View 1 (cartoon, rainbow, N blue to C red):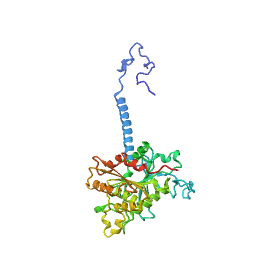
View 2: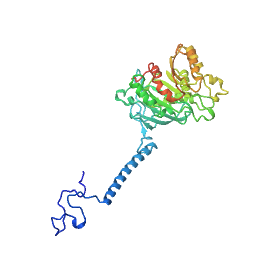
View 3: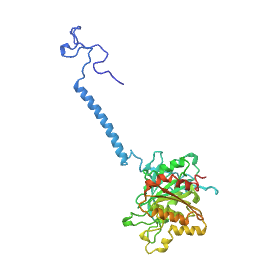
View 4: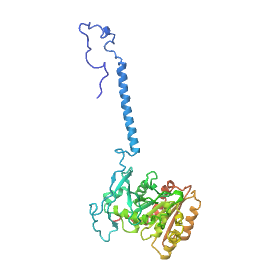
Length: 394
């Protein structure tokens, strides 16, 4: 509600008793005659201005404070750290055995027990990247895994559908975090976009740590079970899939399981698919190494050979299957000038021979980094593997 300024109220002027009504009001007191706009008192104007400035300042500071608290993830301005549930095992109750499924179902209901997921970040579409600490029962390694499910996963239309899973592996140390879990690279939003465009399956993402520690002095584990070292191969190919099966509606067969990775993660994903073609069907390997080269293999030549993609591809061809689909992408400006020739040599030797199916995308001007690889996945590789995979399925 607004009020007329002081001196403009619609009421008769006050006159001291005995004053001549013909004499202008205020003449005896040095004031303005009635009917003229009185000049606001300087003190009152100053006081109003101060209150306005103070109010605006408080609101501005409140906005800044909220932004700061959100940036530094201080509740209640962020939902980071809040519990996230992706559903409970079939049968509904936490900790209970899942209800039996029809034998002919292609979908696997969550087997449980459910993990404790905490929100890491919320995307604009309302989906969450959540994190849990997985105590790997088969590898004996304990580490973090980030997960994300597309919005379709909670769509009632897909309530009885199993979704395909992509295990996304980073390059570099891959510890203590997996850089695919951040939204700055756009992996999650890209998958959602590609699915909407008919290019991709609506993959659930599993984003585990790749190594058991930082790569100090160039030490890394090749995503493998190196003797006398943490069993990172078992962690990636057994424990992480078990986590996803326990908490999500997935695809029973290998037709719903794939890897993607860049650099060292590309090598680990490539090797995982070739070593376990009964469990995984496809991989997108970006700027990958082709052979194991960790210094930790010293003295373990036999085990190193068992984790060599070149030897694994030959064995798969000799055994005539099952079919695997390897989508490579490499920038023509990678810092390691051997990367592209090594991938081309692998494809020339083993590609499209028997069960080993390959495709290569050379990224013009592409460098050895995730920001190069993500957008180019949508220009061929994601379609290539999506055509041969299943999901959502019932």
